[in-house]
Length: 316
Length: 95
Ligand SMILES: [Fe+2]
Ligand SMILES: [Fe+2]
Image (cartoon, rainbow over the protein chains, first blue to last red):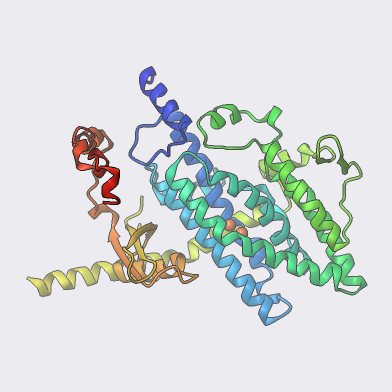
């Protein structure tokens, strides 16, 4: 049993919008939730490099290629910021990586979908990074200091990601020829629903959300964030001349929001369980990269040790 | 945990001359040189810094949160250390 007085003091401190720092006392459940959530977030940034990496060598121009490399490099950085934030809670980086590689840890399901055409790269930047931004802007105010600071840093870098994606979509959907327009619409059809799923189960089905909101780990509910994303994105799709693949989508005068159709939660659960189109491939690729990099990690460490020994000898 | 696990480094960055180095985050690297190179790649990709310090995390000695009272108490009961403790007549003007 955790001390009731400590729990109360913690809750009051959080209620007053104070940030918790690594060495402060925190409830076990708070620490566990954070480790799981931040690690999942970090894994998502890392695995998220794969669908886009697929198009680096085939980007349609040198400009697009340089931009895409830069974006993917940012995602690697985001993974690092988040792993670092997670490590402040007392977990080792190696243990986190191990959980990803063994398939034990989860990452955002969106990255288990394939990128079959160049338009998918536009759709990902616009929709997937767009949805991630909505979530991450909210998390900037999370109660755990290191997580919050990582989010602030990430948000500063994200906005270029979405804009470069939208620019690709403009080139194809607005200024492109018929074939390019079709390609853009098809990509949009592929990514629209999975993007809405990125916000997670609906509030009525989400198990831990009450406690996480009380601890201010989460600041807005899944459904609130999803609605925000839909409201922002529909006019952007209209500008591009794209049709939203949802017959139930319509403006609701009385709520001031867009109504939209039911999400296919069966598909969502299947992908979470590992049965999405690319789950196996993503993990295989990560494992291969990790194994093939093992000798580099060992050699660098051996070199560092040797340098240290040499210095010790010459100092003696 | 393998022995080839790279140690953790804390990264401090001076964003421009005239400002102090500020903690930016941490990363793993085999040695100090690699820590600086990696810090440049991850923390200064958009001209966020003109100088980088790297310190092994294990070399940092931190106060413990339990010492908070001991750190703040002297400030709390010595209010005369603050300028607002003193009353200066309005006729005297800004001081
Ligand atoms: Fe990211
Ligand atoms: Fe991004």
